[in-house]
Length: 94
Image 1 (cartoon, one colour):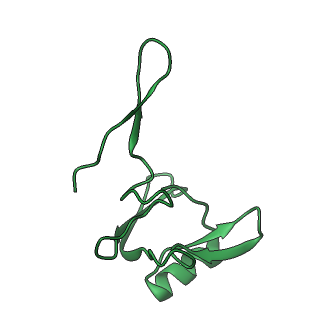
Image 2 (tube, rainbow, N blue to C red):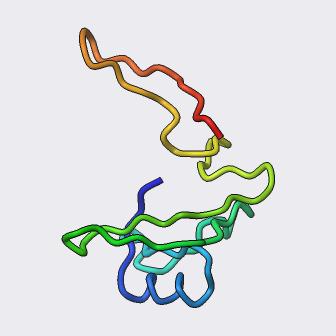
Image 3 (tube, helix red, strand yellow):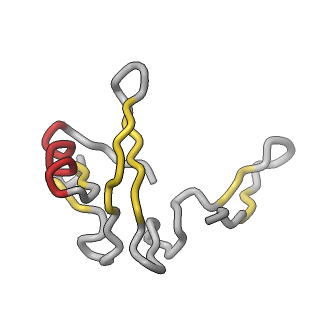
């Protein structure tokens, strides 16, 4: 999944070890899983070379999902490169 994280959300994530983000539409912090129960347990935080993008390596709860659709990842569909744009469902390997 992708989400916005400000300095406060990053600090909350580091302290709680749960993925915490900043909702620009609601103007507040939110913890992934606060409504679904599918919390993301943060194991590592990686920073890109420009220091403007983070990748969180997380652990899902047993049988849990990262996506609100119930999928393990929000990226479970692939778009074709040629012809009319079409989405193909491709399950991720565990």
